Length: 309
Ligand code: G3P
Image (cartoon, rainbow, N blue to C red; front, side, top):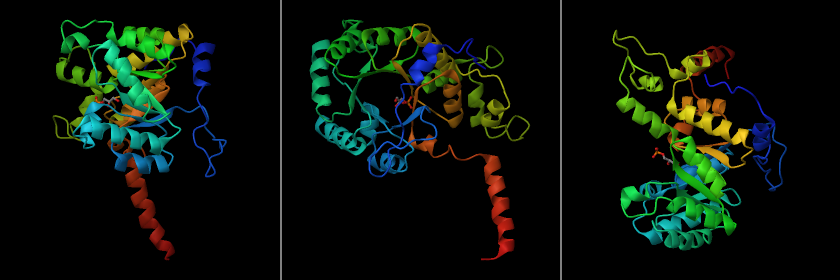
């Protein structure tokens, strides 16, 4: 398990910046029993998924990207903008991340202004790198230059596609308000590429096999982690590294952990020091469940029949 070697004032300071989570019905800040809890965002652009979660106080932010907008039905940039505008209005004043699709510095800065106008709660999502993967002649510092220019204009940035601590540090230095490490994709990569029997990097993902080789049920990872089992997920390790580096240098950029595959990763990210978790609706739908809760509820429901109506 990634136990921080210290609990510095800086680490606490970053967390103490978290706002009160839920307003009361009149919109006044309500004293929440967990005011310093991490915030939970919906990783979605689909209003029908987000709205019930938002109304129930389960999420208070959204992260979108071009893939999620396409999934939400956008077939043109105009339609994508309509969806983003609608989501900003729904969530106001909570943050909604809107991703740039332009690939060149000046065009990206212009597009950031365009997206900022969709809602005052918009946050501009800027990919940290990968520009040369799309255009070999591209400037490798494109993302960092854009973050810097947006910071100078007071536009809040969520830096996306973060896969290592270096990328997170450079984004923070450029002025990003949030960094989004994609921990699920890292673990997916390990799952595909790790060699079984060698360095463990993907033990979490054996949970996808419902039976082991002998045909027995494989233990759920929630039990495994709760029992103090080894934490070997590369994604959680990344969150822990970024969290520690930011604490060491009193960096206030928030760590917005993204790309979740299962609820175990949520716990791991919290142990590792994430400030915000952005979670797909399908994963959020499982957070209140556990096989033993199911068993317990069935027994309570059965026994309560003894009391009649
Ligand atoms: O917020 C980033 C997230 O949408 C990426 O998730 O599932 O495509 O790896 P995924």
